[in-house]
Image (cartoon, rainbow over all chains, first blue to last red):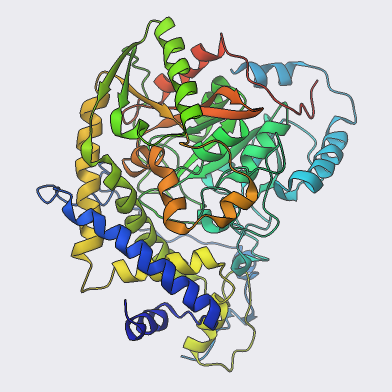
Length: 90
Length: 449
């Protein structure tokens, strides 16, 4: 992976790395991708992708209104303003 | 009811039993660093600990990550909720590799150390759970495995580590690593204890649609299969020990057969591709304002704010986020991610065929317990390859159990049994049979009655 491609990837990941850490991770990632490439000669293209390891029957949670009264507990992990979680500007 | 749990319930306890237990656990925690949090108020039931990526109501749950520091879940994970009876008492949260990313238990600050000899690793990622189980006489730990996070530390710390079929225990309340691979399981000092706790935790759950309502069987055809590719490249002493273990099973009326699955080594890259792809999306929710760590400066633009929050990830987490994002990229998705999913389908079909009338047996880990500095110096590709015995059953969602089968140089060695989906009881029963003639060794018996 060249430097530009790696930088684009870091930007997509929202990761900012110090120069030393960046060099280390880039080297590791090149080696790991080379290892991932060994998968290319596996003869498995006749199989449908297995998104789950078992058959999961289609099941949905019941779409029903529930009155949850403990909103304070749900919000206690965040900075809040009235009933809203405060976040950064978009 | 399991022997340990029923005996514990029956035996009279001194009034100060729990306060003394907490005191002793606290002292040993200074040495072995297995708990991130100890419940000082435990006062009843069989003590159980919970891996730090499984939510316990109002108890800090961080998956050993700085980015979740201070996070207090307002609910219990279903597995924890089902143990919240008079029979069990919550003892504390156990340390782990950050988000489950590791084989040796060293990817977190102040990582746990092996209870047999603290110069050695505890294994990962459920490192703290294994150490706690090896130290406490009457106790079970709720752990979790994605690619071997129960078998590896169980083997290195000399305890029974049971990973159930995917979908038997609800993942609700688990801090996700990789949704299609994560399984909540049990560490204990005997197969019967593991089975008892598994029975309490399993069963469908409206909060996890992948948790299926499926019966669990115990079909044992008394046949073991050794996959030739899985015993190639194993440390010679581990291999010698494994041969002796297999001979003992033959003495227990098991027949043994060798089979070849030439592509099985491809399970390792396939596993890492799938797990990193899923992990990179799961970790996107840690934005620095909703859970745990707070960046605080809301005047920053969103991307800068998010980038600052993610700077608190450890190096292995950053590596996996980058790789997971890469393999999901539109230009390479079919080459890596979809190919890995197809490989998983082929692996499941092949293993199901092998397992229709046999268990697969292998060592749990291909190496002896490494020293901490040896594990720290290992490059990532080499470390990932160490998981090649635990990855196939995890990738296929198959139930498996690691149990102590030998001691080399005073350190434990584990053997792993794998069976087909939903035949979980069969391997636990086989280990219970093994335990009749093999006595496990523990250096500590904290809380013994």
